[in-house]
Amino acid sequence: MSATIISGNFIASKLREELKQRVRILSETWMQPGLAVILAGDNPASSVYVRNKARTCGELGIHSKVFNFSADTPQKIILRQIQDLNANPEIHGILVQLPLPSHIQMNEVIAAIAIEKDVDGFHPCNVGALATGHALFRPCTPFGVMKMLAEYGIPLQGQHAVVVGRSNIVGKPMALMLLEQGATVTICTSQTRELASHTRSADIIVMATGKANLLTSDMIRTGATVIDVGINRLADGQLCGDVEFSGVKEKAGYITPVPGGVGPMTITMLMNNTIEAAEHAKAKAQIEARCGSMQ
Ligand code: GUN
Image 1 (tube, rainbow, N blue to C red):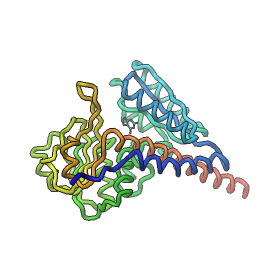
Image 2 (cartoon, protein in one colour):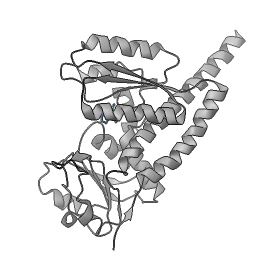
Image 3 (cartoon, rainbow, N blue to C red):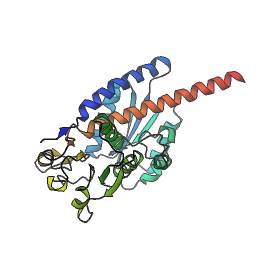
Image 4 (cartoon, rainbow, N blue to C red):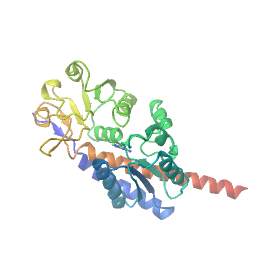
């Protein structure tokens, strides 16, 4: 029997209607939420991602500004830009598009973002908060995956989840979020010896390796939920995930497609986090105004 397709497009468009409503309330009662995006260098994929983020902001009524820097920009210029944005009351979220040019210390740049504006959830304080069960902002891609699992009522408590990929953007936070929901989590990489021996025992598999068609139908058990975070371009220009979709969909219980799966959820969760950052800023401003009027 063919798997149920988990449509990221469908869930994202439903969530975006709710987000528009929250933006409307903020704009009418306080101010428009604002997102700043820093793009350094000329990575073509990054340029496309940033354009899509700015376009989605526009569709939802979020103010956005993209700061473009050439590939040879000194790190201190980018740090200065972040400091300006940290102090700008009209900007509630700051995102530094990764990867950065190789001469820039990514950790130093991310650590410079004010934690209350770190809508990617990559600041070490936000990573620590997630790891200890008190997340402020959850990294957007794994957060989107959690929303997809919830929307389709896929149980996590006591289930075996295998995450293939160990990046700071997807693999590690994905494992933490699954663990938070009571799953038994195994983290593998594309190099794991006998990867299939792990994936075959999984109820839920999340593939995030960037290796086209790595997961094949012989590597899963019948009825497993398969989430494909990979976006790979084949030699013929075709887009595909880390999952060999046509074979795996005949054996899995649920599966995400590429494109139209996790991709639209990532941007939606970025919008969610930006709105949440603005809601926090509004609440803080109201408390400060109340305290001020008591003095
Ligand atoms: N590059 C690839 N994915 C992401 C992401 O989620 N956030 C940022 N900032 N850069 C990325």
